Length: 269
Image: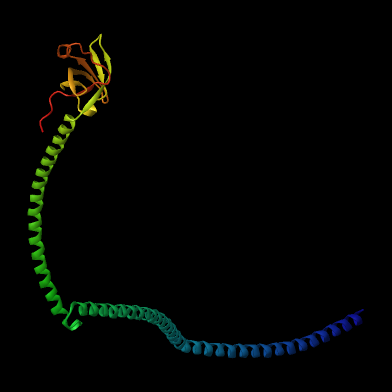
């Protein structure tokens, strides 16, 4: 039993020695690997520090480049804007040039018309003599204006005289018209259309249209001989009712339809 135990201890001791040797080798390998990693990390750190330093050194240059780029961009935008503005100005200049050409053509046409008018006025018809021609026209205008004002005065006097004469003409015309009406009335001759002996009145085929009034005295004739007298009592435009003056009737005479009536007293002319 002890022998077995010894054997086990020997085996365990040998295994421990082997394990210790293997562990030392692994530790050495791990240490070497760790040193390599540390060296690699140090190299990487140094490279990173160098890179950071380079970036730090290059950053101002990059900022300067960025600023230059921004300035260049702004310059390009300014050039584009200026180009657009120049294009707009060029189009406007073209439009203005066309308008000026058209206006110039109109001026030339107007000058030609003025020259033609000046030529028609006589003398040297040109723009060079235009001031002198205008002065002459102004003097002519003053002369004609004075004559015109003189004519207006004369016309005003003539109008007043004409108005006065017109009043006199109207008065004379009315007088002649009234005279003609009176003459016309004096020549009026109407016919008795009906007679009522019992009531003592008759109807005459003329009325106010013929100038009869209730103050008109009428004579009754038959065959050119006066046989009686009547006085209007009711007058219509085309007929008159007149009362028979029985005292003025001729002896044994009766008024009959068909007898003629005239004015007893002609109106003065």
